[in-house]
Image (cartoon, rainbow, N blue to C red):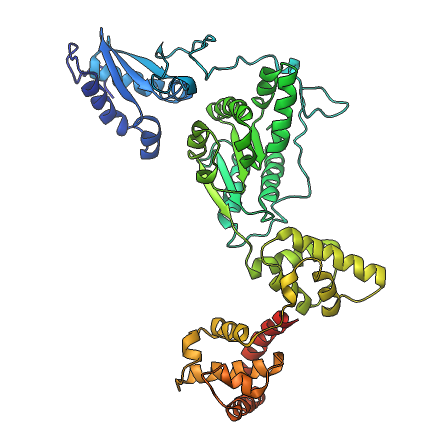
Length: 491
């Protein structure tokens, strides 16, 4: 960029036109995402004495521009307005008491004056105190106060955090963050999902991996509940600034259950100041919530807008294969050897809650040890009664029909039709065979579930299945697989 080439004459009077020319240059010098985030929200409001005044949404926005784009802005202004051209900022202060007439303040470019406390300004910077004088809510006994206990469980790592379709995005992004905290586009990162789906484990794993790879980073895990309680305690003692200053020391801040903030507006104010400081200084923030940001009713819009800057990653209930892998890992860690049919049974019946899987493994171990019994299906059935009520409802013919349809890729309506297509007939015969084997229904009742077939059709189907099992190895292998699934569901 040649500063000596002036695009507009120095007497140009339209600030909007001047800023549009500036944007045309800036667009060629930054990536599109940065342009959309940091330059599109800006509006030009005045041009006087060769000084272009632009309005930005917040103090944080202004400081980010000055820290990251001051050189680009300076050269652009001089190219458009000439060597005497200059830039000033008008900052719209966030003030909930004056929504009809937002407070603003004027600042020159390339300077960072401290904002003086004023009733019109509610988003004030906090002047950082000497870290050695700041009270540490997480002090480690016997250590200097400035040293911070990360509050991490060393057993919750990426090594024992099983990856599946339910959590692949969140796990991959979390690992990337741990390797390069504060330098990725995943900042902040918001992980959301239902209860007991692995959000806390992931948060802890990020913290532990960060500490392993970046020993010089100050990492802190804290639940939103503890954060709120600390804030209340510091407020009672008139130490809110001290509280905020402490959290501004953190390099990687991991806050669990951020949805609890919706009932704590004053804690949100403190977190807003902490968030801005950390984000501005390239620190990493990772949050978890039971719900996505759009459903956090009661959360301040200024916080929600910042949550939207980074990555949102949902963790869903683990699928069967993931649940099975979790069980196998936990049994290996406990030194247990459990039959394959028990693993299938537990993984099939516990579908939503990882904590229940952990509890079942512990209960199986305890029961087997105390009663000196082998871990088998009978013991698993006894233990499961305390965890899953629905596991012991009687298996219905309709259940088997749906399981066979899913397994063989056959439509449910086709299964009940009179179609003579080979794959349909085979699936129908297998379903009748399994219904006879795993339910208490009569042959007549089974036939009625297939568009009114009589009992002789059911007998013929069962004989056909048994004959094919004896003569066709591939057929037998597939049948044994679906039989195992039905058996697990029938216990």
